[in-house]
Structures are given as C-alpha cells and as structure tokens.
Amino acid sequence: MYCKIIPENCIACGRCQIIAPETFDCDADGIVCFRLDTAAERENICPALLEKVGQAVRRCPAGALLLE
Ligand code: SF4
Image 1 (tube, rainbow, N blue to C red):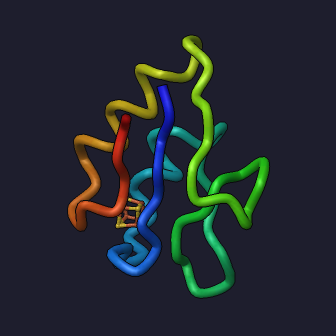
Image 2: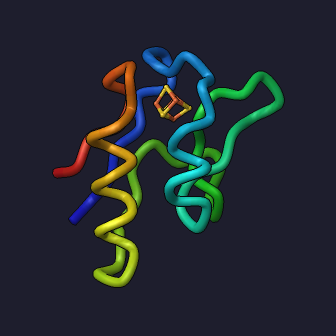
Image 3: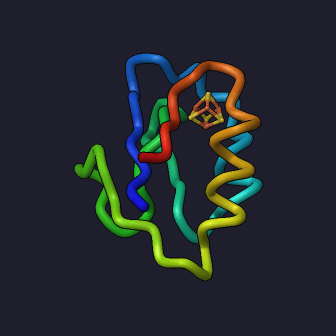
C-alpha cells in the first residue's frame, strides 16, 4: 500500500511522527514529510510498518495522511 501526504492540510501537531517515527518526519516548520525521502508526497509502505502508518493515518486530526 501507498501512503500519501497532503502537506497543505497538515497542522504540525507531530502526532504521526510519534506514532510512526520510522515513516514520518517533519520540516523546519513542523509540517509532515517522509523520513526517507523528504521531497516525496507518496511512498510505498512495507508490510512491517503498515500497522503503525495506519494508526497515524486514522489519528491525524487534519486529514493530511491517506492510505491507498
Ligand atoms: S498527524 Fe497529521 S496534522 Fe499532525 S503532523 Fe502528522 S500529518 Fe500533520
């Protein structure tokens, strides 16, 4: 599955980075990005990380994360 980030929706709460730090990071303004490729807006999520990423998607208060 792929995770897509919508940085313009992000309110820089930091929740996704706490739940799934292997996948998510943030820029200098606290806006979400992917840890391994900070310029990417979509990333393939390996099965081992999918549960945490799913939790982060469900708990994002701003609708800035999608699984597809
Ligand atoms: S949980 Fe959502 S709003 Fe909070 S930092 Fe992550 S993407 Fe942004």
